[in-house]
Image 1 (cartoon, rainbow, N blue to C red):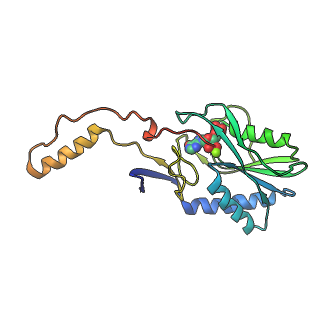
Image 2 (image 1 turned 30 degrees about the vertical axis):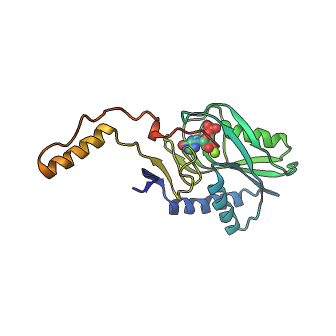
Length: 224
Ligand code: IMP
Ligand code: MG
């Protein structure tokens, strides 16, 4: 398993698997027959997926225009807060156009629902949605998306644009940051190494304080 920033990452979707699926999703998008297409990635988490998807779209003969929106949902516990706000809006006139929203993960669906309503209000003829990952069974409201890369287990993922406290966005794969071993377990491992060398334990009165920084030790501001 790769180690990044001193943390072990368990890979869920590797780079080759993602690239192959992106080509399939691009073919699906081409077959959908969107007209005068404007691709709108939702910053920040979708930036890597969107960049690769756009190049895969070129590979199937599509050359859409591209604009960005940035949304934010604040939460310290890596659970959707339910409050989505607009940080950066599109600049183009969307009247009568087909728009493809691109996002990294569909979880509660609040981010996508907010973005879809916003672009529909701007006059888009159709607002379709492509997401890299969908966490099954987590929708807060009924919502259908048009193109899904992979169904993802209900774990906090990083990489391929997605972050934990702004880290790990540059990983070329999607993975899960493994829990740090507790001090007790680390001290235990050191103790048994020391004992195996000289037959005596060097382990002091080691603490058994548990990690207190939440899942995988990362506090995160959830950013779409
Ligand atoms: P939703 O509004 O609950 O659907 O949440 C979607 C947004 O939360 C996505 O756009 C992501 O940016 C973020 N998100 C949800 N799950 C994860 C995760 O496992 N890792 C990183 N970001 C996530
Ligand atoms: Mg996102």
